[in-house]
Length: 353
Image (cartoon, rainbow, N blue to C red):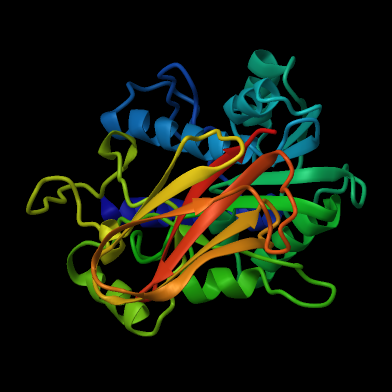
């Protein structure tokens, strides 16, 4: 059965290369309302992992949606279009959406035509979109499929996303960690290389990862990366297993999956939203230097609240809503970033004047 699946996959990718569409599973998308289709377009019964996968996708779109209010957003590799509903309902002024699959776009148009303008386009060739025409480009679990056809195609897809996104705009991308899924996804080195910073590149880039680490014999990949200090920002150490698709047959000591050591690094703030000040509580798992800073949506540091050595334990700091020059920060979304012992944790805060 494994050999047959491999051969079907190889033939499908060959057909995809010839058609220059770079994705051959036309019906395999994430659908709402318990709908699931196989590669031939036949509906099948959803599994628990299908349900969890939808919840996980929706979590990504809710994250991306906080950046789109009043803006033009593009959902690149939109699939069934369910994410466009989230973007539009959150306040996007306009939503453009593209997918390489005619079947997926047909479904999207029949269900979400009031939310977005859909088109059949590959993420490697977004010719229907003009340069600098989008404020926020969003792409959920697309690049790992493009990668199967070569690194050059992956770079081409990112270049297209960057081309259509205006200067000062935002690109929000979700893709699997290849440590978790073997040959599917990107390593830490690959994802950082894909979004280089510098002149004529990205002005800033921030890589997030959750606190779930590889299972079994792949755990060593994470441990080597940790030893080298190649760790991305952990926004939250809390893992909701109801939204987590675990490999078949995986069992862990507590039945919930292993968490990275960063699971002991905690940060929260109250009140939230706040005006004019908020108290930030943070927990440090072991003695060492800790730095607590506040950043705006563009990643610029607004204030440094803590930069000192601590014993292990829980501590508090207060942000008075001012920048380092003592000026009042404007209303909006900010992030408290805690760094210690090679780990980073973040907390979203909302200041309302």
